[in-house]
Image 1 (cartoon, rainbow, N blue to C red):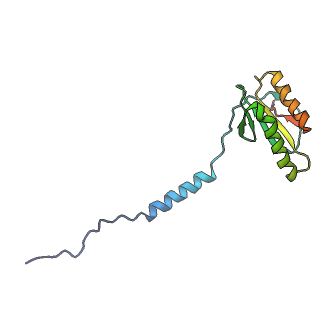
Image 2 (spheres, rainbow, N blue to C red):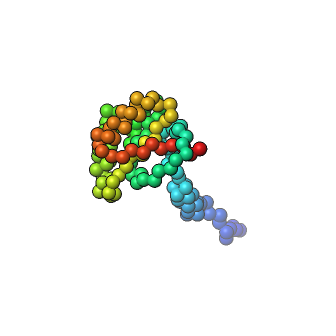
Image 3 (cartoon, one colour):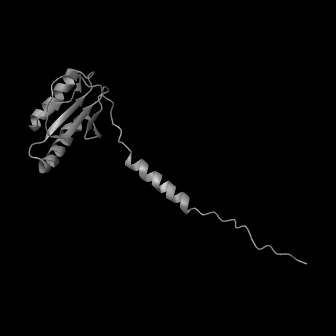
Length: 132
């Protein structure tokens, strides 16, 4: 006499619960993601405060890497990149300004060169500092 089993074990694995968990984790990490700074800078200390429209950022690292709004450019291209960013910002605000984030180990001559570019473009430049 042949006996048949009534309860057969199914060898299936349901992935829907795992995909839901992975999707929720992905959303969590995307929301909590913070953009890292492109350049690590040691800013000089100061006590004064200036408030201005901070629409354009120009950063210079200790090894003379120039970035305009987190886009790396060579020193020869800083003026043209700033000019294009200023024209974009003028459509959004009345008078854009450039915030200079310059490492404190950069030579003063390089800082003066950047200020000269701002003078030629007729845009106000503000030197970013670390509060004391």
